[in-house]
Image (tube, rainbow, N blue to C red):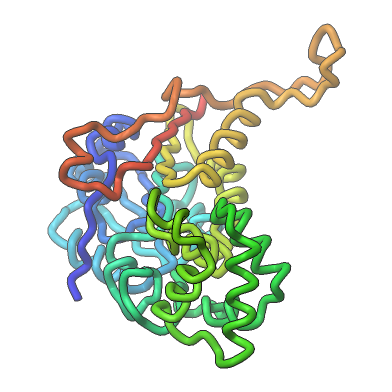
Length: 310
């Protein structure tokens, strides 16, 4: 299957990274190489792209797509939170870092990966095939209380407890083996009146299970707190989020970096001595244009935030 990938906020990302031809740039979620293509176009033979992804299929596709560019390229099978691996590959500080979060178009459209409620497939949802935990394990072994928690917290689904109860009831008869079976259970759990409006009834639950399987929020929280340390002066960190949970983490960690003072609020002046080592590039998150949404509806919830190392 072809690795189809439409880079979200492409022009905005290229502008935000402020690419220097001889710089070192990290695409921490290279996917099909859409954004990386734009980075490589702007790099000279002295510039370097470090392409990182936890999905080997993505790295293979990106390698083929970027083969014609003359800049230096390194492909790393790792999670973007593994900052020590990235730093070693870079050999020091870097000029810019991009994270395009969430699940890729290829992963959604490749039925056998089990990410989509639009295809009937074995429940996998692993972004890294070497990981142990799968969606099957979550759905069939987590307690009703645990299922309720992740569906409510990670899916922001108001019918979480009812969906969890229906899952537990169904798996008592037979294990829930496919995404189609899970989708039918979710539809049965959500009252008909609630299914008539809003997104697909399974969207939030599938998101929640995927986040749990891949520990997406844990990796993101760790990465955003540490990646700025890899930047050289003037280097930029750009992050595209696709739902409020991701955006909240990025916003919170950026704000903490922008205002690191730990003094009690009642102190009239700062005595801890901690000062910001970054500045905000985007005053508010950048959203896709109407023109982009016409050609790429999946970009609708995207938000881009950018900071720069002082």
